[in-house]
Amino acid sequence: MTHRLQHVLVIGAGTVGACCAWHLAAAGHEVTLIDRELPGQTTSSGNAACISPSQVVPFSHPGVWKKLPRWLLDPLGPLTVRWQHLPWVAPWLWRFWRSGTAAGVQRCARAQAALMQQVSDDYAYLLNRAGLNHFLRASGVISVHDTPEAFAADRWVFELEAELGFEWHPLNAGALKELAPALRLDDGVAIFVPSWQNTTNPARMTAAIAEHAMGDGVHWRQGAVSRVQAGTDGVAAVLEGGGKVQADALVVAGGAWSNTLAAQLDFTVPMTAKRGYHTMLPDPGITLDVPIISASRSFVMTPLEDGLRLAGTAEFARLDAAPAYERAAVLVRHAKDYLPGLKTAQASEWMGQRPMMVDSVPIISTSPRHDNVFYAFGHGHYGLTQGPTTGRLIAALVAGEPTGLDMTPYRMDRFS
Ligand SMILES: Cc1cc2nc3c(=O)[nH]c(=O)nc-3n(C[C@H](O)[C@H](O)[C@H](O)COP(=O)(O)OP(=O)(O)OC[C@H]3O[C@@H](n4cnc5c(N)ncnc54)[C@H](O)[C@@H]3O)c2cc1C
Image (tube, rainbow, N blue to C red; front, top):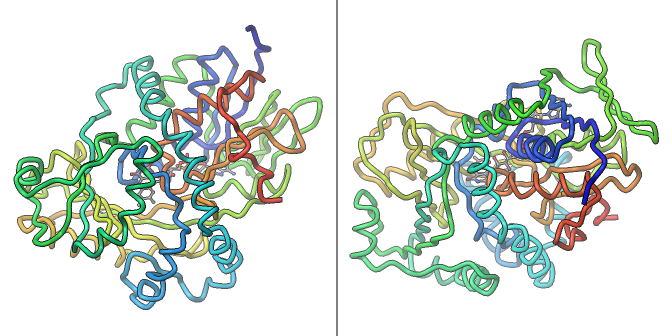
C-alpha cells in the first residue's frame, strides 16, 4: 500500500521520540525532530538499561497497598512522596489506587503483554537496519528475592507473566554461582528470566538511533517548544525565544513533560513524574555478566560499557523539584549487601523522571480531536524497552495503515 508522504514534527528526542523519528524517516516521510536537550540526554540516558519484556504487571495492584505504609514511613525505602508536593500528586495517587483492582491488573497486564511480545523483534529490526547491534546484550536477568517469603508473595506476578508467554525458572545455588559468582544471596530466591536484554549504554544508543535517522534525512532542531497548534491546514510548534516549525503532522513524545503540550491540543491524561535515581560505579571491582534486579528492594544492577549502574527507587515530587541524591546513595548500600566486593570510588549520581500513567500502560494514539496529531508517551518504567515498538506503531498510525494490534488500550481518551 502506498501512503501519503508528509512532513512530520516529532517533539522529544528520548528513546521514544528517536525511535518514532527513525521509523517515520524509514517510511519515507520528511521528519523534524525537536528537543530542548540533545538526543537521549534526559530520562532515556540514565535508566537501568534493561529491555525487559516480561514486566507486564501494572504497578497498582491489590498487593502493593499492603507494602505501601511500610515504604512510605521509610524515607529511604523503595518508594517515597515528598510530602510538601502531596497536593500535586494526590489526584494521581487516587486514580492509581483505583486502577489496581484484580480486573484492572488483568486488563493492563494483557495490554502491556501485547506490546511486550513485539519488543525483541522490533529491537532486532531497528538496530540491525541502523547497524547498531553492538549496543545490545542478550543476557537475560536474575531476579532476586531476599527471603523465600518475599518470593512467595511475588509468585503470582511470575505466574501471570508465564501465562502471558514470558518464561522464567528458579536458579539453584550451583547455577546461580555459575551465572553470577560475585552475588551473595544467603537464603534468598533467584529466578532467571531469559527474555531480558540490556543495552551497554542507553544514552549513546538513543543518540545513535537519532543520528542514524538524521543520516536518513531527519532535520534536527534544538529548542524548547512553548506552544503547539493543529488545524486542518497543518501543525506548528512555537519555540521559546522565537521561531516556529510548521509541518503536516505532529508526534508528541515529550516523556514526563507531554501533558503541557497535550493540554493545548486535547486534554491532559493521568500521568505523573515518578522519579528514579542511579549511582554509576566506573570501577566496581567485581564482574557481573548478567543484570540483577532486586525485587525485594526495587532496584537493578546492570553492567554497562562504562561501569556498573545501580538504578531504581521511586519518588513522587513536582517535575521541577530539586533531586534528593541520598536516594541514589542508598542504592550503594543495598548493592553492597548483594555484592560484597563492590568498590564505590568515583561514583556519580543521576535523577530521571519516569512518565508514569496510573494504569502503567503507555499512550500510543491518534489525537481524539486532530487527525494529524499523535501521542507517544507515558511509558513509565519501560520507555527504553518499548521505544522501537512504539516508533513502529506511530509510523503506522501516521500513515493510516493497520498496526496489527488492537490500539484501544493505548488510546489517549481511554480515561474519559
Ligand atoms: C532510574 C530509572 C531506571 C529506569 N530503568 C529502565 C529500564 O531498565 N528499562 C526501561 O525500559 N525503562 C527504564 N526506565 C524508564 C525509561 O527511562 C523511560 O520510560 C524513558 O526514558 C522514557 O522515554 P521518553 O523518550 O518517553 O522520555 P524522555 O527520555 O524523558 O524524553 C522526552 C524528551 O522530550 C523533551 N521535551 C519534552 N517537552 C519538550 C518541549 N516542550 N520542548 C522541547 N523538548 C521537550 C525532553 O527534553 C526530553 O528529552 C527507567 C527510568 C528511571 C528513572
